[in-house]
Amino acid sequence: MTAALTIRDLRVAYGRIEVVHGVSFEAATGRVTCLLGANGAGKTTTIRGLLGLQADRSGVVKVGDTDVSRHEAHKMAGFGIAYVPEGRRVFARLSVRDNLRMGAATRPRSWRSDDELDRVLGTFPELAGRLDAPAGLLSGGQQQMLAIGRALMARPTLLILDEPSMGLSPKLVTRIYQALARLRDEGHTILLVEQNAKLALDLADHAYVLETGRIAESGPAADLSSSTRVRDIYLGTK
Ligand code: ATP
Image (cartoon, rainbow, N blue to C red; front, top):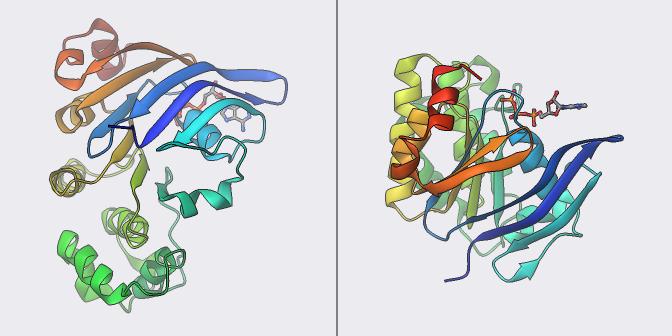
């Protein structure tokens, strides 16, 4: 089957300094793929590069069979990609309901957003009683749920998550990963960026390890758990 996302020789630079040096990977349809790496390895830059959010980039980006390498970032939603950035970035003054509605803005009009809203609230029942609250008043964990829920409102073919565990208590991290496991079991295609290797490898089918802007290792998630590189990231020795 064609991969949901194919990246070939992606290079991304900040000004004259290249920080992603020819990265290639795939996100298989209906699977969870994770991109692991220590702080500063280039995970966020890779994602921003493939989405076209960093202008200084080259390489091939394909969504299914379609080459989107030259498309600007705002077009990516139209190709079925939803992105939950690091740090969540919900619209603090808007209600939870309106944040969710904004996620549905790119969908064809014929889709019923109420059905989608019900599905999101099924995944995150914690949001159901807070629909009229300003998003800024939610806890960090609820904001992460809202950010993921907002992305799901677009019914994406590929969901990209950048460090969904960041800044959350262990209990909430467990809750978020439980929800991601549910999405995986429902057949969603997910590309997950994580520094927390253990969590990500427990969830993912396939993993890539990024080290100073290059893929250093890749393989089935179950195999990578025993890799020295992964252990270094996990133990924070790199
Ligand atoms: P983190 O877990 O901290 O988000 P990361 O793996 O996502 O780390 P990036 O944020 O992609 O790593 O950073 C990769 C490299 O690019 C780092 O050396 C970083 O210092 C550099 N970098 C990131 N943002 C910029 C920027 N706006 N301008 C210049 N260099 C940057």
